[in-house]
Image (cartoon, rainbow, N blue to C red):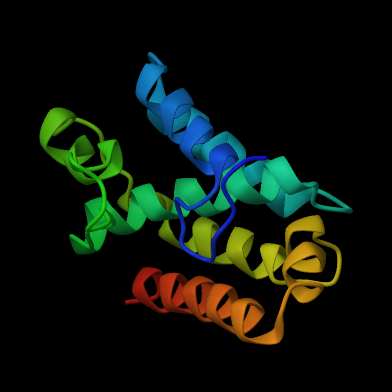
Length: 140
């Protein structure tokens, strides 16, 4: 059974998409495409929702300096070192697109939202609060 938690990277698919960004020769394009896919989806599939959240986290890290590494990780998450390793990549122009994609993640037409809504109420509230917090950061 895979990892599942309310944190942005407490999910195997989220860690996998982070790896995809890290391995990409064009990470900004991958991030932008994930946001576009989420926005344009009539029904947002689980993996597309995860990709939109992870992409938004990368933008928040670069634009606002928010850190996402967890205390129980031995090393920082790649998202936290991304701006230092890629000073030539500017994600700031994607903030409003990320907000729109995150709003789609929270919508009734989102599998990710449906799965969390079916979870225990306190865990669902924690997940939703995390997404709203990310939106607030990106709207600064």
